[in-house]
Image (tube, rainbow, N blue to C red; front, side):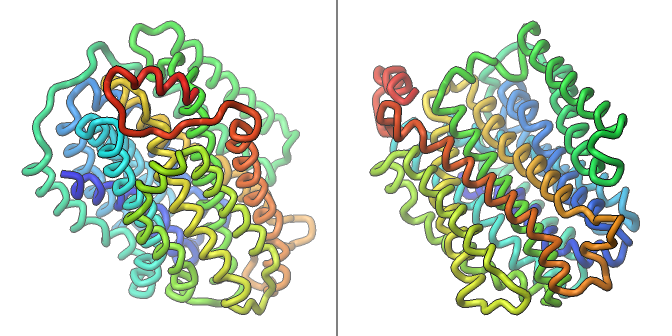
Length: 475
């Protein structure tokens, strides 16, 4: 059962990075500019992040097995549709549908694990394996993306289809039937307001450089996004069965885990976006060469599956999360030295290694900390919340990064077809600085409790009678 769930998460993460490698080829064939290309990534991320909480709540209400299998089938269908469409808007729409399907498989799979394995050593082991599959999927997507794009970018959409179908068949046989753990209804208004707020906010940031940050339309869109956020909070306070029980946010360890996930996934997704465009457009590298450049990242993440749970048991999640974000920050800082004729061993390899270390330490630790001490009837909520944070962080950081590298129409500078490598590097530099700043901010926010607060404790094997006390100590 664990293998089937891991495979589904592997596909969710694989899709984000695999499509990222194919972006220049997609843009060239469909005539999409950089600002439009980011919607191929953001469409999936917004569909994923916008409905993750609803996906987790649906699993609690309807039964996890049923929700997981239906969503996995929808994921396979959306992958197939993405490979046959012939226009940018239709491609983005298929990516949104695929993200919606992933929004139900990801939190459901995680909540199946947390309700199957008792909190402590066994759950830490299962979650470490599960999250490492997710991180490995994200890293492996670079390699598969390079291989598939070499054949044709449409194969990056077709590739997950047979794997998803195989996982669906095996999952139907292996995942045990279950009963809903929660009662009540759906908070559709909360799902609509939260998803709409993210969509409007990302659209505002992406379009602002073109029409102006103080343009009435830009200001109006930001006000609409703020109003939608306020409506979401008011809805969650008043409805009988909220999408997010706001009281869960009083758990300090859970909040810190969600902030760390935003910094980790947001910075890495945006860095990959920039690196893909820089290596392929500015330096003329092939998709496979670009993918091989980050191969050490994927290898380190995959190898960490053998010992990450032991690291969590020994050092605790707060220290590992901080160390992971610190490694990512160091990798981004080192990459700022890059020039238009980079030596791989000295300019790219150190960054690739540090990114692998950062993901291997941070990703499983964040997921363990985010679900520790949460009752079974809210495991879907906790799982959806941390994954939502990652997707929201990815969408918002990528939107700001895209805005920072937007073409300057007044001077004609930017990532145009006739720009030199030096011009394109200068064009991408502001985005690289911003990605680095996001990771460093994550380090600061996660390290403060270690430096000035009570010593945090890691989730460890404990009896039912001590779980509440352990949670209070962690907070």
